[in-house]
Image (cartoon, rainbow, N blue to C red; front, top):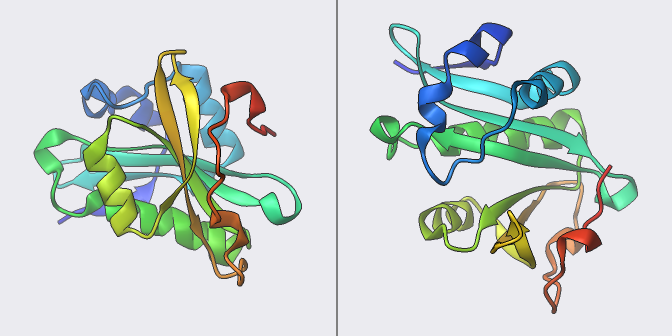
Length: 174
């Protein structure tokens, strides 16, 4: 049976095996600690019996006005636990927190343009490509900014795709 719970400090010493996938973005320890301290509601882990970490999601809430949104910084599932809808469950949890607790307009995420399996999964979850970000990943590979409107965005304005690609320096950050 899988348990989904809040990520805790001890998990930082136990989740390295989940990050071994070449498509998973990894960060330094202080980055994870910042998310854990600032946005604990957006950081969850899926755990198998025996306390084995199966996957996790890390995100935040940011923006102003109609740009107030939940953001998926990372979601990953260890290869041996894929195809069990764990990523879907983790995404649904982050979306629910963004929608019901923080009253966000949308949830967004960035994905490598070459990561077709992830793009297809996000599309099945209701995400659309909002814009292409040129050379987003290490100045080499394009990223796709994908979004899903939440209940507060009644007119779905947040997911109307941009007609042209943007560069990383055109992105808004908080």
